[in-house]
Image 1 (cartoon, one colour):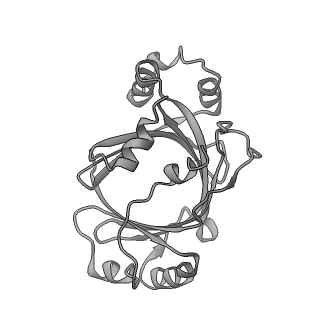
Image 2 (image 1 turned 90 degrees about the vertical axis):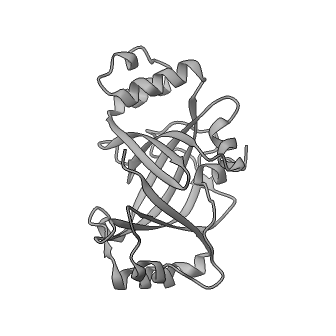
Length: 223
């Protein structure tokens, strides 16, 4: 399991051009971000008791969450992802899904899942069956990613957060979304064994401190 360190800074929209210029001076734009950014759509899963949401809000030390994700609303590349966090370290597992697989999951047809060759799909099936895990809401936003070789550092600026409320029609590019209540810019810094000083200095802004922020939690505020 590849464990990564992670910082999150909650910024204001006015901080965005400042950080964009700083990061661009010392880091390389992610080559997957054509034009410097891309759109992310995620469909988060949760239990009837909102376990994932409550564990995040309560600061539970060891927690996990499942989501389905695609980029630029392009169904040709969809991943099922499981994020796991403990003691400030995180990891992510993912596996490809086809649009047809996503569609039947949303329609409640899970019979194929325990026969899958992918362990993560089988795990999701078990937790949907035993814990009542279900698709909960869509989360949309724009991401500007930067990379830095030493330390395998990845820094992202996320903004334009929108919620699908209880909409789970992940494959519908016209699914109605509305701006999330918190119009924040989220700076995320992820690295392996060490964070180079040059990156540590670049991401610091006066009055901004590392803080917990969950896009999923922000998009559930209307529930």
